[in-house]
Length: 216
Length: 238
Length: 41
Image 1: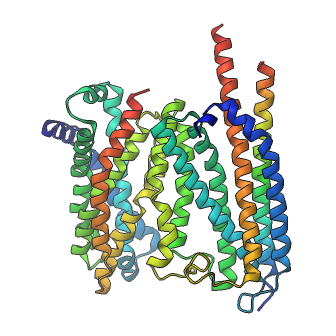
Image 2: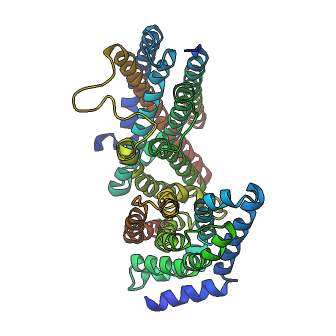
């Protein structure tokens, strides 16, 4: 399984890096919003948690439709299904590779972008993204599995995945807002629980989704 | 239940049933409408209380529809019941409609009542998410070409999204909110005066029967469409 | 309380229009499917 993980990471890093693409998109959104909303730093600091969280989620979703499609198209997904590795394990490897090449880099870039917004609660943002982006990869993988056979699947993946990611955005941004106000509203533990549940349950759902697309 | 797995058997049951269900639905809706417009205005809400009689039934039906869709999805996924997938597929657009009606009537009720068309509280947000879940479900069915794959993928999506239903239901308890708390199904009996409960229940039943009528009709449409398609394919091969 | 009858009528109008439209579309779809099947037989 470690071999699979390495292979996917190398592929992602090499393919112009969905990592670079995600980071660039993240930065682009973070730049566009102040242009649209105006330069009032008070306002920007207030909306930063939400904006940065949404931008991170969208950036992470960018490369998701290719998660299984490349392997599906050249037949290696069938080979993986036949290998002694269970599809659940394959799913875990792919989710981990995806997070390492999108979620983690996004989290690492976030403090820099937070400065652009004048956001004070940078550690809170960092922690919330660190805890929450695995859920984005996990739930996104389910969507990727469900849609892997769709050619021009482009927009349908976000459509089905975003409602499921709503709790992550709500709790993630909520945790940062709580830190800003100096309150504790339990958002971070809830985010942690959500992420944990997503990561634990997703491999099964993802494997089921991949299986149904390989079967028939 | 498995006896109606045979589409012909199902049709032999649903065809005579639909006119009755439809008539019953119309009668209930008419009755509910009559009572709803006749009932005295609430001392706090005035005339706008009448919107409750169409908002609450729409919301209930929207959630019931998703529940039925999820159950049908489960049956189709686990037991490979041939009609279950089609039943789930047929329910979705109806569910989306009732969710939309619930959202719109809720906003119309909210504007005069609480001075706002919308608020991002737990219940409204999760109910809005229900609408997007329906749209995603329908989109998935349409996007995947192979019918069997589409059915299974949509079923998985429906089941995952079902998590939203208890959230909608209990969000009013979990978070202090603008939307009103549970006033009907609670210990100690309903908080609403009986004179308002009658039009509410009549409308709710009317909406439910309307849903079932249209649902059965849509399932029949699915069955017939598939039959036509397989006839065309075998004619093409001949 | 100002006259909010407009709101009430709007809400009822939209609701019943929506249900009626759904019923019409459902009925039309069913009729079309039945006709298509008849033609093939």
